[in-house]
Amino acid sequence: MVLPLRAILFQLMLLLVTIAIEAVIYHRKLKLSRQTSIEYSTSLNLLSTVLGWVAFFLIQTQLSPSVRIQLISRIFFNSFYGTFDTLPVLVILFTVSTFGFVYFVELKGLDLLQALLKTSRNDAEASPQSKLPVLTTRLKKALRRTDTSEVIVVLLANAWSHAVVLIFLFLRSLLQA
Image (cartoon, rainbow, N blue to C red; front, side, top):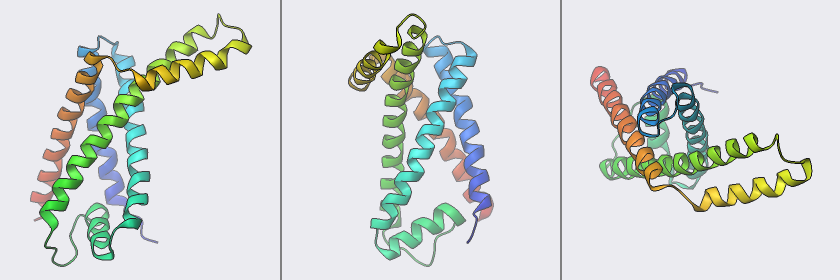
């Protein structure tokens, strides 16, 4: 078994940078306290990271062996294996789909987080029998509705954090070349 320690540490570093950038944007644009914005950013980024890795491990089993080897080699060992003709197309497709996936997960995660926190604040007043229907109703509403300002703030936060991540990836590839 090979443990890609360098990839894990790099992922952690990128996660810390992303959390910091998004927390600042949530604090300024959503008018949240610093602590709340850091908690939101941390929760949403950990959720999107875990779901992203689960999706990666599920999707890579469906790829052709040559594409799978290239993808795993690039992600875990930061190098491509041999020559690969369709590389630019796959990199662009992977980058755009990753951004879309993370954006959707964080947007819906923010709605669910707010619904759960709103429900937990009202739990002190509610009887134990009425908690479950209230929670399921709020979760269903959270999945359907998203405030327009929150959509833009999450998009802005993800755009800034992904831009910085791309700069880090570019610098990393320059330093290793």
